Image (cartoon, rainbow, N blue to C red; front, top):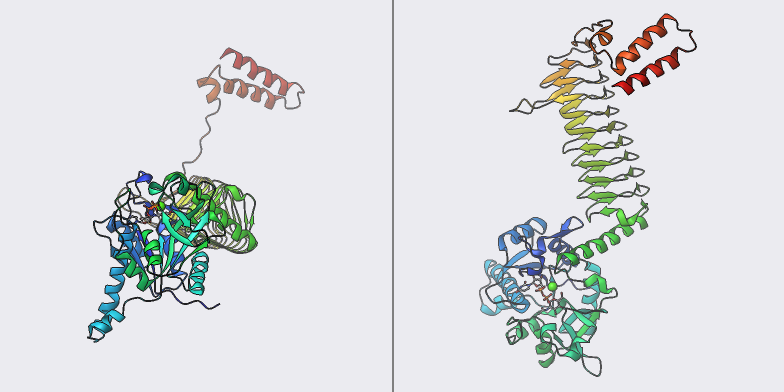
Length: 520
Ligand code: UD1
Ligand code: CA
């Protein structure tokens, strides 16, 4: 069935969200890497409406800025002092109409009738910024019902076992929807109704405009209720219908942080199952968290305790986890990423990362490279096959292909004022426990000795050494640390050296060490 593009989708986001107990507006709280409002906008835009309008008031500037960022084409409408969802829609519609009329006037049309004709007609979808699990498919199904029935109002409803807090759908003996009653205004009989208003509707624009004019504030909360439009439209002769959501959980609203976590878990389950069906092995769906904007190729394996956040992209055959958190990270085909915390990093195909690695922003690891245990990297471009296997810090550097960085090496990038760059060529061998003091350059194919402190450039092919020559002071331990286990071991070793074939030498040494330990 071909569906009409709705004239507009309106997202209500002006409420305070008091029950969140938060300095941040409710609709800016997030699940699966998007705010609640962003989820609502994504669903709205899935219907390709001619216009999207977001109604704001509480923390207006923060909410409006977020809308401009996530839905730049959306209109922003300000709700005035009058509270309630009805007033919110009234203000949203006023902005929509004013924008349409202004466009006609700008095009040179002059007559008032022409200007009024420019106002939205056809279907207007109204949805809430705090119902994040609703999809474009569900909105579309409601819209199809609205159009096929020729309704003035179609309400998205659900049957729930414990309908606490929601508006109830009051139906007549013939099953027709009569009105919606808010729980604060409901009788005991009405409170027992298990069909609830999801707060999402399709309206005929002209009927909505007319009905809103009749909405008052004569209710328990002294607000203009959007829900009053239902009865008013019906009395004016419009058809009112309901579309019952197949899965009631999809329309659950978020009013407090308990519901926020529940919605987050449900959405995560939905995302994880989508990836499993698409060919991703997820060993433990309950401990795997995947944001909505992550992309994963088939035949990726995700081990338990893994979070893939932001716009992370994982290519085929990669294995991620266990216990890894990757935010905005690109993982190449066949790479392995174990017990790693990474953000804004690129991991090449076939590369190995972890366990216990910390990839900070700007890390690029070439194909078949390695960043190993207890290694921290930041703003580095490591070429193909580069290995930093153990206990190192590599920051602000370019490292050529095939280079090996020895254990416990530190790239000293910060002089206390500036961050400086280190350049290491291809196929270099940095010895263990080196200190490379930036800015410094090490040429292709160079070697550095263990423990070197590199302050000056090393030419290609050179060996750089600067550690102090080793001095052995014979007998120092027995003279200066008498009575210690070390001294006993040294003495035993000296005797063993004198008669290496003596069968008892080993036991004698062990006994001497044990005796000494007892004494100390
Ligand atoms: C509303 C419905 C209720 C429904 C429930 C579903 C009304 C009167 N009641 O109640 O029938 O079961 O949603 O979740 O509509 N908002 C504004 N301006 C306002 C007040 C609210 O924009 O003046 C926005 C909020 O930001 C929110 C949405 O409207 O996104 C819903 O507001 P909320 O106060 O949560 O309404 P409920 O009491 O949940
Ligand atoms: Ca609500």
